[in-house]
Length: 303
Ligand SMILES: Cc1cc2nc3c(=O)[nH]c(=O)nc-3n(C[C@H](O)[C@H](O)[C@H](O)COP(=O)(O)O)c2cc1C
Image 1 (cartoon, rainbow, N blue to C red):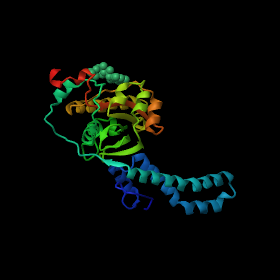
Image 2 (cartoon, protein in one colour):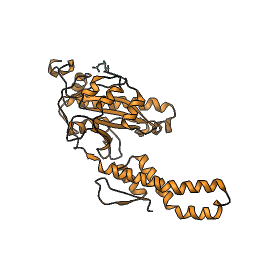
Image 3 (cartoon, rainbow, N blue to C red):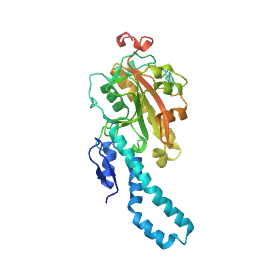
């Protein structure tokens, strides 16, 4: 069943999308689940065009409301489909494949637990793409063929969406990126250094503008509330805690540091990231190397 057109993740020639490949696009990180569903729905509308025409000819002229509804479907269905395809193609062009993360090291978890301290002053040194890869993997990376991740999730529903605000990262242009856990890739959602805007949305906290990068944990609430009702909100907030702690321990093990920031204006952060209406920012985590002005910058052996 042909449902629509899109480009593959490397931007190669278009491929026909159908229900099976919809799943593959999600798995490969080309589209988020919602985007793939939107694409399929809209393409189905387009495919049904001759049916709409027949219906209209048969009933539409006699029924004003049906006539209007059909007209709107025919006018805006294909246009929305085109939008979804354009969105998919645009995304395909802005995908960054991250280096493979390490899944073993000789740094004991006990040492990371003992040495982790909130870091608010960062050196001006750039983060490497390998470090960014490792931090994002620690927060939300996929660790099983079924798609289970480094952090637990109520009902394995994974409501968290992780963004990375890059300012000073070697091999990554300044901008805002969304992390695709299964594909272990980043998709650019906007260009330019947005750290100062983010700091302003967080009561001007300087740690955000000083850090070479900021991880932003957000959640699509309905993924969890759909199953657990209002209690799902508490679940996804707890999940952000798991992800943040993983990330901070991983940062410690890499000789980096960060601070989990909860003091910010939700709506302003959401606007900077361009979050969809049903998503909410939960944590900002600036990360980088210890700077001279932070007690955490003392050699770890001295602590
Ligand atoms: C929910 C939460 C919100 C926090 N918000 C901020 C914040 O907005 N700014 C900040 O600098 N630190 C923030 N922190 C970090 C705490 O200040 C820090 O963890 C605490 O001082 C203990 O120090 P430690 O992390 O070095 O052990 C927050 C921590 C938590 C758990």
